[in-house]
Amino acid sequence: MDPQDQIGEKNSASVYEDRPGEECGLFGVFGCPDAARIIYDGLFSQQHRGQEGAGIATSDSGKIRCLKGLGLLSQVFPSNRASELKGNLGIGHVRYSTTGGGAIAHNVQPLIGDCVDGRWAVAHNGNIVNAHELRRLHQESGALFQTGTDSEMFLHLLAAPEYRKSPKRVAHACEALCGAYSFLIMSRDRLYAARDPHGFKPLVMGRLGGGWVFASETCAFTQIGAEYEREIEPGELVTVDSGGIASTRLSRVGAGLSHCVFEIVYFSRPDSRVFGHNVHQVRVSYGERLAEEYPVEADIVVAVPDSGNSAALGYARKSGIPYEMGFIRNHYVGRTFIMPGHEERASQADKKLAAMPETVRGKRVIVVDDSIVRGTTMRRRVRILREAGARQVHLRISCPPVAHPCYYGIDFPTPDELIASSKSVEEIRKYMDADSLGYLSVSGLLSPFADKRSYCIACFDGAYPIETGCGDKGILDEPEEPTAGYDP
Image (cartoon, rainbow, N blue to C red):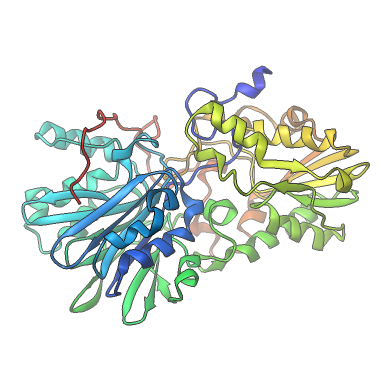
């Protein structure tokens, strides 16, 4: 193996797939019969956000029951297993881990906790940067932790006497946390939806019949026939119960918005509306801007499917160079960056895309993709195209170079695992064996947005909007695997 191909091989879940990893997708229901079925359908349309594990918790106003496990939603809930969960209130989660071990059953969410006043369930998207400090304080007071995920900290806050006795219990628990979070929280008869004051992660609400639904992405509402209502505002806690719906503003509101721009660059489905923008349209505009910033004489434009499709379409439109299908994707491989085990990820990544020799042979090819993280996978893509007969390969990337780690819920590794942290664009081009390489500028990245200061671009410029407080990306000590799960 070329030593450069070993970048990041030590411990990252994304080593063999040159993609960032997202933490999860959320879906919640209040006031809808057969809530578990609706949650399943809502999570199914967000499966792209996490494939390590899935879970659903529901309540019939008497008892919270939960089923969860490792794998895809269809693997965890075969033959409509979700029908075992009764009630018109529930939350669900599909997981990709950024704190805590991924392929460990007790880290799968929703997390369930039994307090003196009843059972609670929590589902979380994001990363709590002060989880270490809070966890240590609670452990010193005698608290026992059952998982390696930062999300469990929220259950301990809910159970603590100083919070439990407060009429604003959930709000105060949210206010103790620092970092990125979108939460769905439920008691036996109430549903809460919360978003951190910086608004790092998306969270939206809608109407379905006479009930309410909540999701990470609006594409989930289309799947179930719900009507989009609005975003949960940054720093907002929404409460739904039999008395109706109410909104509470959390403290630290006004600290400055920091929407994760990678939600639009890569994570979200093209048909979703995220932070007020249609994802597909923004990505098309990125491709158009790339064609302006980095024009080149070529015969065809091809996308790395599927995340490069929209930007490649924009590049072709603006440049006038024909858009062609240069790669064929095997859709049965899935997102390899979240597969457990280095060997499995390497094997599956190599199987994921095949070049079309009839399309690229003898051609000058422009390849458009969303990002380069470590560089190993893109290097293989270039090699595949050359082996298929491409005369030239020009890479165009619809975001700036990723040179800094993320501490807010994206699996961007340490700096020495990011190729752009130690290499110039020209050095990266040579490593890729590409004829040219062009990254979208920061100004181009922010050009579709009216308020350009409301987006977090720390992975590009290293200007973190909040103090991270931990140099190890918030990885928590992993407890031993329990011998039994929660009693549903």
